[in-house]
Length: 181
Image 1 (cartoon, rainbow, N blue to C red):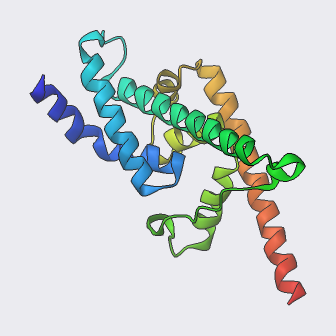
Image 2: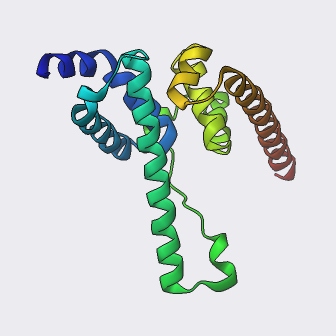
């Protein structure tokens, strides 16, 4: 088991980390989630039936770990809002976590794209990351996300349209800001 685990780790660690990093936008949190993924892998490898590739199975676990993380964050945020009883203005509070320096790439268009990707739905973001950043096939993406091939294609199409629209809006905002100066 140790040799199998080591092989899985060496083959896919960087890809799993990148996937989780793009999902949560925080280096330390992504590292914690990677550990959680590999704990789940160790605890459930004996139940892996080989119906999909190990990579697909691993990314499926990573996706579920990310979803669980988002749910925990939402519950935590809701408890804080209830505790302080913010009333009507509670929905105005936003998390202003800066984008880690790792993705502060010199090219402004890439930075803008990552910011806009963050505004897409979780499904759209997952599909776009797996397809274009992790270079997975439509079939692999469908297997990882537990979607049909047609749903992956539809989500990818809508995600790309949404991303393009968000980037155009950002471009217009930048243009308006420059004119105001």
